[in-house]
Image 1 (cartoon, helix red, strand yellow):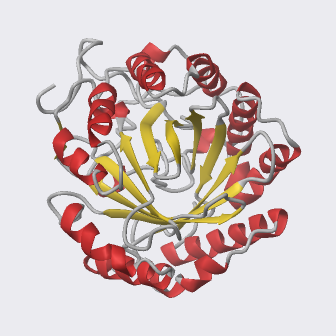
Image 2 (cartoon, helix red, strand yellow; image 1 turned 60 degrees about the vertical axis):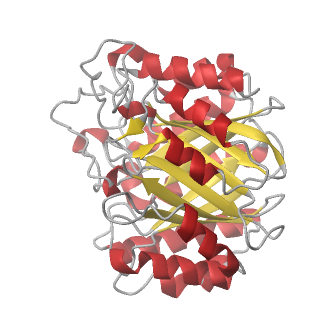
Length: 392
């Protein structure tokens, strides 16, 4: 879940260090990380094992590409153009989930070709886990036009649990027609799913997608095995202050925006304004409320506001303790599952830390992890306890 493509952020491969992988192909690198992460989280059911086996097929022909050949395309899933991202979600009940997000069309000639590859991958998942993909077909003309534009077309994700089949997520590009039409496309998509009445409040309280403040990043759908499927809208807030992030969090009925602000300050290292990589809000909608969000998530791009991953890890551990997710031991196991390197030797392994709140359940903290298949970003040139950003 990377906003760098839309915010002017560029991963400087010339400054990065070589990964020196012990595996030779993208398939081996990613399936190894996913399997180790599942083992660390004790997600060992047959459905999780099926996901590991399915992953190379979702990636398509590039799965067998040697890592030393470089990225198959400038994928924006991860900063080093790895076409995948992993994450661990910590719930207050102590039961974690592991997630893997992939760009099935990485390496395609055109954005439209990438979208078609994504649909094929989606149908493969739908067949494997008895998932209804009709919601994607309902908005195909909006997000998958014949002459699609933009940095991506369709991403897929799997939510892997200790029991039961995975939940499937699909991420679509609001700028598939053009950036100027993104708001129009999203409003129409929300209307088709019955959430048109929510649009006025969104434009009044969270309208930060004008060119100087950020963009509509993703329109996302939960498919298949979810207790309450969601329609989700991701918004990047360029240059947002903590107080502005709290205002968007206030769209959630009965929410506590101050707790979101505290989370933002902790993960951001005290930054008051996020003028490097932007904060990202996700507003989710369910059938329980057609006019207001049923959920809100704030994603803080910790990698751009911390010297190294050791600092990022400590901040993630702090918010896990504050929000009842515990999980510090699991966090350390997850990081060890991803890489053997010292956390102080680079920055970006932990890309985001997010706080999700819902009107139907307790808060949840998620830590997003980069595969670092092609490069490791060196630490920022700062003292270890210093944040990047205005007012830090």
